[in-house]
Length: 184
Length: 419
Ligand code: HEM
Ligand code: FES
Image (cartoon, rainbow over all chains, first blue to last red):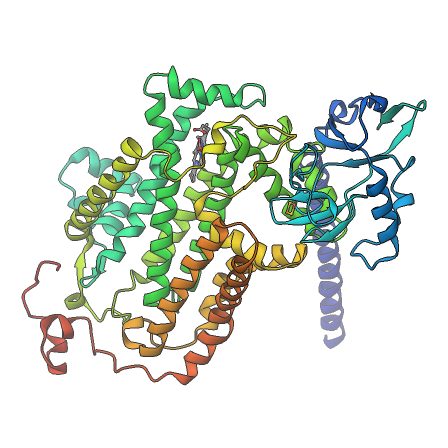
């Protein structure tokens, strides 16, 4: 009598743990299914194929006079190309050794020292820094100044003062010939 | 009141099957409300009406608006010039957003002063903070729709806030944009969400009201109602008072819509968006200025973003920061002083948010930011134990009837009209 009672209890316990397993497995499958369905809903917000396929641009830099800059639009963002003066290059090289927030030497940021190519997007919150046009404020380091929250970039596009965390980004580019740059 | 007490047989028939009429009668007519509410208690209903105004004008604006970078600006100008009464609808929607925030800010400061966030209304308060967050998201995305310079650069700066998140930041920003900058995909999704979120707000407002009706309104004395002698039915006493408040509100609202429609806006938003040029001085809409000031007060990108979101997060945990059992600021002499200092601090933050981030403004902005957090994280917890509150009245009826404590149970006293 007593023995059959324990058997019964064991049976119930075993059935219970089987049940538990089935329940947990069902929930898990449900969660995986819901996740698999959620992903397309989330991922549709990432850049679409046509957005990703945006063509690269080519530009003839010989037209830029020394000390002048041009602004181009690439992937919806401004790209700055500056034909640097001797002084600007010297300043950039002179400051290489200084302690900076995002240390980088000037030679790592240019392919030809005369032409600095950077994204015109402040690395703080994305405003377009001033300093492209003649007469605009260029900040305390002879480069660019972002008016939104006061970031100063030097003549190599490196962050020197203000809230921005990193240097102006150098986009992927190459010289197709002595004068023509391909961005992207 | 049970269903069969309705006179109209059709109402009775319906109510028996779908008790919507008894529900409304119970929650909006009989609903016992403290009899001593002052005019600060008008702002809840004003907020609700503002939401309805925004939804109605928004739906009709959508019938004429085009969410495409090449057409958005022109479609809004067309609404202003060619669409019948379009100028009126847009100005109501545009100024309505500002008035909505004015009303909600007063509503929140009312809660802060009278301790409406304290037990048992913690969830009611937290749902309110959720509504505030949803409103901010909605207004931010709405401001992007006209695709002016401020729309574009506001969207750029605010979405870039997320790039401060370590590691995943850049990916999240690209995901928000649907590209490599704020562009057509961004505008489209913002329109979709701008249409959706107000209806989500409606849902949270309903929860807010369910939580409210569980224990009823707080009141200027901050003490619980003790029975029928302390309350009056919502209808007609507070319906009529709310209507009076509404007429005053609409007077100011109409004055803004008809005489100063662009006073709270920014002229740069009448320049079409230009991805290659940031306006010299970008500022968010006025209702974001205090938070913008906090963002800029911290000289570190991630730190600034955390502080800005933290400014709202402290509101969530406020019921557990201020542990004083006394709700109303009326009976808390020291709290009262700090409340007004805090209020002034918020105004200072708003002013600093509108100023360029340089020189003395930076210093003031930092001090005001530190004070904002000190108020919640240090002053309120300390006051909860250090302050000796003034004695509380025994019941709401006591001060109203001007009698001594002995009158507290004067249930038989004739019901008087409110105020
Ligand atoms: C919580 C409620 C709402 C708030 C705070 C809000 C806020 C705003 C703001 C600030 C603007 C920019 C106004 C301007 O400068 O032109 C705007 C525009 C717009 N909103 Fe809303 N909105 C709300 C609800 C809605 C709803 C429910 C809809 C649609 C059903 C809607 C549709 C639109 C449209 C089409 C525009 C673009 C036209 C324009 O700029 O005037 N809004 N909204
Ligand atoms: S966006 Fe340039 S300093 Fe903030």
